[in-house]
Length: 499
Image (cartoon, rainbow, N blue to C red; front, side):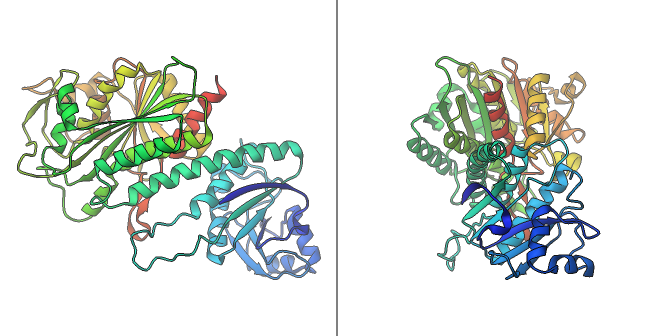
């Protein structure tokens, strides 16, 4: 999909579809008024008749409007074209427009958003959110269906009209960033949607190597189980012990910054299928445990975005990947293992496996002498209880890093919420037989999981993102969301702006 910027008047443009804004009580934006005049008042009459009430997120598609050079005209409700929309309402409008255009099968769409103001948002933000809404709407996953269509996705071009050259420059920057971020989101969604019999730890390693071959700035190193055993990564290996699939530790090094500059490390949990191990999960909905590698998928997505945008940063994308199965050699509740850091861990629940793969990976990350480490994981069901499916959880040992990630989440509309971490929660991880237990009891499960990881992240600034509630949808719209690729991408973009 192309993201284009043009200047001119919307009513004079030829397109498969043009979108104009309308509000309540007959309110119309400048472009809508111009088309209404050409169409002899048809838009005014539709508003008066209540065919569209102009509320935020509403839409109405018109065909062959008299006087318009466009095949279709999409009326898009924004509450008021003269008053500022909230950021949430603007995103709802953008998604509504994308859905309407997709349903109509338009090959291209043209929009003028310059007249619609948004609270605490500039022209760049508006344009990027709009481009991303259309880009994400254009996604489909049908490569495993025997009767899949060979046709290309219908929407090929999204054009924004800019009122001035200055605004056009903001739109062009937004188009470039949105294109890279959308590619990253699609990468993450593709990996997340693949079943566990295809997307194995070795498959993730192959995909990482393939990405490195495409980009000179990226290299890839993969550790197998023999190499991890030599390094003493017994915690990670305890998770894969019951599976026929070997674990992999993947490290993608992107060198776009200055030589010797400390890298940012993004670390993803890559449990390609999580049965729970000996602590077996309930059967209902277990198929969704293929999504337990969405943290790893988001790292692959962020690295895709990073490579496409060519950001002047040093970044290491790490993936700790294993399959958690109840085989004859599987780790048992009560077993005690020794991590790469030398800490002993009592495994009270084999379904709390994500922290076991991540803790060894965090220790391995020390060799990069990182500026900061951000791990991303579908770690705890408790996070869904706490925050639902709207916002990801965050725990950090550094307030500045937490503020940077919170800010990136707000800018990208991919929000996180910081949870507390102190010694009271750490005490819940006490074990009578080892240095630490891998669970802290029924209370504050998301926080104690973060506290567990914090013990292996004492040598660098670190943040943990729990995306259990945001990484995928269930039900009729079941599928990976690609979150938090947008947040991670914004965090990296902000590091460039702050250099």
